[in-house]
Image (cartoon, rainbow, N blue to C red; front, side, top):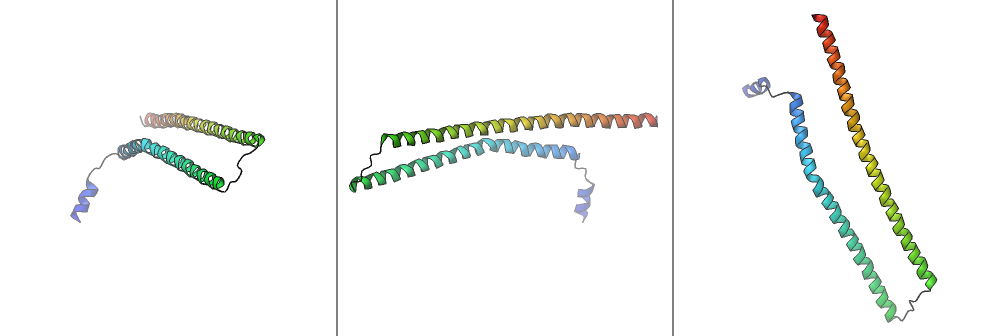
Length: 143
């Protein structure tokens, strides 16, 4: 029990300094993990795309060999080739548009975060001015 009483009477420090120090440690660690996180996402995406490519190419290869051995005619009319090409081009365009939307949404989100910070900073300044005004008013009344 003597040990506990020593802990409760010992001055630890200002709560704001303690919180600020620990928040700083947390943010510092989070910042260190961001590049690793993004690299992991990039690696996953590359692995996924390579696996998908290899799987589809393997399926095409098996089907091509089966068609050749079974002597199946695999020729298609030029109109079908054009339709398939146009469909593929359309999918690529949709993917690019989707990428633009995602990038725009991220840019807007980033701007909103910056605006929030600026608003929070302005609010903190206003709050500090109000507190200063209150305390100076009470101080003047006492004198």
